[in-house]
Image (cartoon, rainbow, N blue to C red):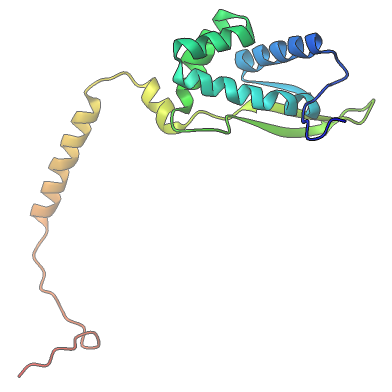
Length: 169
């Protein structure tokens, strides 16, 4: 009896499942998404998320785990340097499954398995070169605020009789 065993057999033996996992993983990393059946997408999702988590830390041991799982050093490099750098603030949930349609022949749900968009803060920081443009912008803001405060005319405060509770004696 297979009590509490959650794995997808996909009508394949262990070697074919491992090969399928490697190929689907490679395609997801290269193209940032694939169109496949919902069962295959649910099969690869925890693996992809785990691989991206390994790529975030990028230690030598994690790199070796990725190479043994994916079996392609170029794709591992892309995973570490391109994909994992976009998710520095994200701890999990690197992929999503978007249902598309039912396949005509066997009525299987076809889904789009894709990686989540990069975090806007980290992708913007990674795309911009480190220049002093931000320093110039902050100094101009300081000058503008000084001009704005110096040109204002002092106005007398008017007290609202309803909110004023002090009595003059």
